[in-house]
Image (cartoon, rainbow, N blue to C red; front, side, top):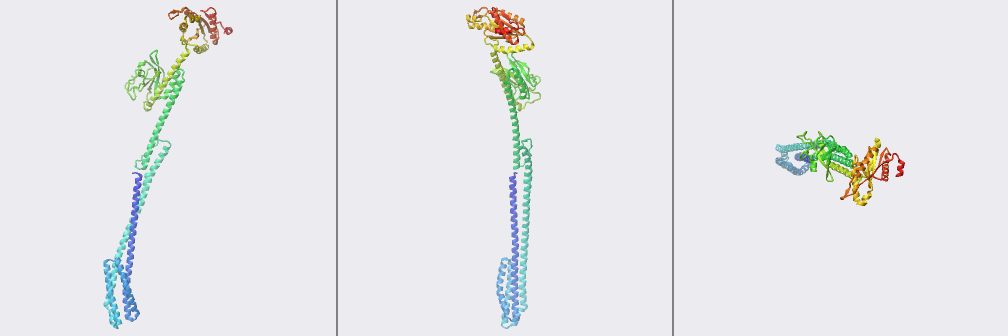
Length: 609
């Protein structure tokens, strides 16, 4: 029951008891008034009856004194009292009629009749006395018959007074009892009203208000301090306090939900920050090894409940090869054919377990889990509509998938997209770098590539104290091919010579187009004798070339070669200049020959340059 209902009921009961108490007090007051009226009536009637009796006896006394003394003043007093007696009778009759019962009025009337008889005898006695018949007059006033009549009047007045007293006493007693009853009832209702008020105070304010409010106050203070772990008290009463407790429970549940959502939001924000930083780091990677280092560092933080592998698709071998892994995955093979993965077949993420049942990939080792297929995820990596690899995840041993891990699927897809984009960018940059470092006509590395490789190889040779040789080559009379057969024929000559030079070294990347019809070969680890032998072999193979362009034989092709070896003939930093000077010597000495740089002739080399 609600406090308002209880309060209304208590208020209504209190008002009813108050009205009842007031009514009983009014009734008690009325009973007291009735008692007072009865006492007053008794007093008036007693006074009137007493005066009537006294006047009757006084008339008898005045008449007898007149007979005894013969003095006229007693007669005058008699006549005066007789006149007053009539007024008294009328007043006594009026009072008797107002308050006396019918029997009492009849009794009083009888007494008045006998009093009238006495008055007649008194008048007759006075008349007889005045006539001189004193004996007759005395016989009338002092005779036995007069005495009996006088006693009868007195007796009737006494009986009237007794009956009147009995009736009045009975009325007073009844009024007193009724007044006492109503007074007692008024006191009882006042006590009940006070008890009701005290009960309402105790029940409503202490039991139903104060105690629950004290408990709820502590809960509210802790909730205000964001302590949503507090348990609200169980208050089942259906009133405002119960509504307040229910509101507090709802507020606590909302607070817990807000905390949960905030924790999820913070976790999502942290995951997004990790992915953002991972993406930034991958964008700054210059090689695949840098990228795999970033993947191995960030993915265990982004997906802490999953192990995984990063695969790259090797088109030349038609194989998917692992480039890195994290958290020690065990289910997937390090290398497999592209057809062994449904994700690569369908170019879509593949998940054989989880919310949807699907076919496991052949590259998974499901023999150890014949009944329960692990919740693995295969995410294909594609860039520019070309499949480039695979991102694979599997749950860690002892870890169960839950809603939080399920929410990470979207982040895993974001990671896969970013990794694919980073690998694609790496490949694109590599292609652009190769294009920038390669001569488009001959397919050899260009001058820019030479600068980068030469710095590394010279530093390596100097560090290991190994020789390195440089062959500077120039096609003899190359302008003749352009002028005679055209520039396309000249380009064809350059291409053929470039192919031959590319296969003349252990590493094809050590052959460079230096500029125009000039080529350069680096021979790491070759001393001067070995380099000279290789140079003669190259010169001989070039002279044996038969170059045909558009069905027309272009004639023989010869080359001049300048050879320099560091540190035998020059310093590492002067190897190109020494080889170039040796080439100039070969051209000046008749072409189609190999010239070796003079040992440590740096001054002459400087003058020649």
